[in-house]
Image (cartoon, rainbow, N blue to C red; front, side, top):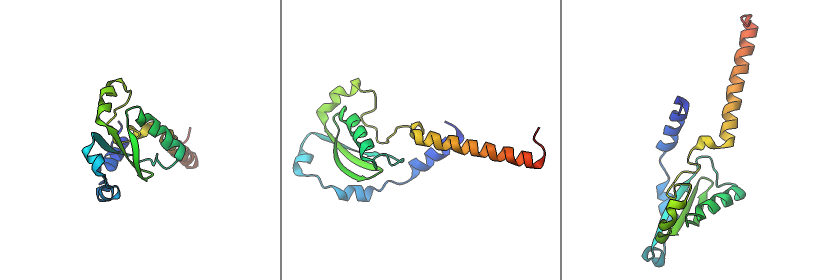
Length: 138
């Protein structure tokens, strides 16, 4: 990763999660706690859960690992559960079934790549205009 990516990633990962809200929003039934369930919260710093179509694609992918939606907190957080027996199929998956960040590499998002490309192009164009106005452009 480059310096800017590392700085952004440190900022994202150092932001404290809103655990108090997550702990109080859903209460688990006795059956949930007695049953053989695993729970996780999947986070998206890019707000991937805000669009219904995108959320559906993500839930379909998580379902391959046995995860089911319990609750959607907001566009950045969802709670999932799965039976512990689903671990038996984890070796066949092409993703980490215990991931807690989606996408795992936020820079893989097309929107982020387009934004970074546009920023770089704008800086380059601005520099070229500056150099032409200074009379130092070849």
